[in-house]
Length: 113
Image: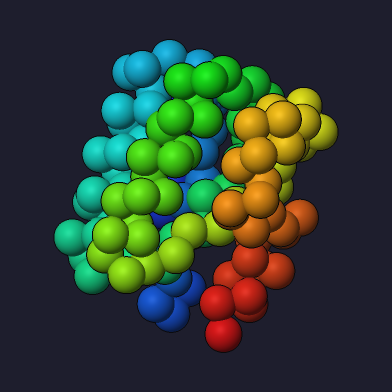
């Protein structure tokens, strides 16, 4: 079961994902959450993946879709808390070259300033 926790830091939304990004249903939920954040006029987003242990190509697609949606609104998206197995997938798919990845939420939030 996947769910999300939102925490706002000034004009930056931190979206903590709890669960795995492996099925279309989960990536659709992520996209719906991103659209909800953008409706709040917050277009700088940190997606915290510390509670995500598994990601598939569908999950990668979901992250790319979220990134495109945010950049279309002149915003930026960063990732934090990525474990080793998820980080390997991000590196293999070259996603780590287009999205900044930080060890902690604090580092990711500070990188916006």
